[in-house]
Amino acid sequence: LIGLFIMLIPFTIISILIKLTSNGKVIYKQKRVGLNGEQFFVHKFRTMYSNSEDTTGPVWAVKNDPRITPIGNFLRKTRLDEFPQLYDVLIGNMSLVGPRPERKFFVEKLEKKFPYYGRRLSIRPGITGWAQIMGDYDTDLDNVKNKLKLDFYYIENISIWLDIKIMILTVWVMLR
Image 1: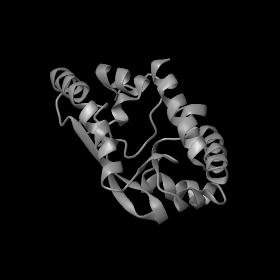
Image 2: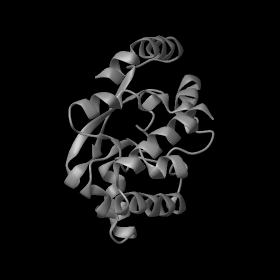
Image 3: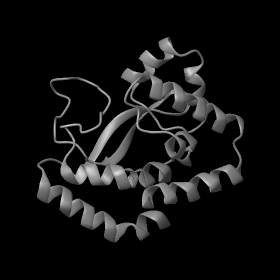
């Protein structure tokens, strides 16, 4: 709640920039798979043009992705697009730290490809996590394999101190 209050002015500025640079809603809602495989809506600032997957279906973002708006590119690089997820933390769907929630379409594919992928679903997903600060955006299966190893490291070593370290490093990644 404090985080949402602190971010009120940046949220307002970001919302205006999104509205001025592209059509569509400011906040993007998407179903994701969370704790114990339960689906929930995650909230993010919209970084892509509206209806960007209508012709392709679910696909991972790639470098220089034409679906991403200019302001969306900035929001993704600075990770500011994730801040509306503080609401998801407030209502209990997410935690501040944990593995990133993924869409059901990808979870089903990844569970077939990687043994024990579903183990990520044994803890509440997070806005940030060890895989987010140590890895890159998922663009292919090699990225997923590396992030999966990082998620398992987090799950096996979970502690308040690791969470604090991840939150501090997240700020560093955002500023960098």
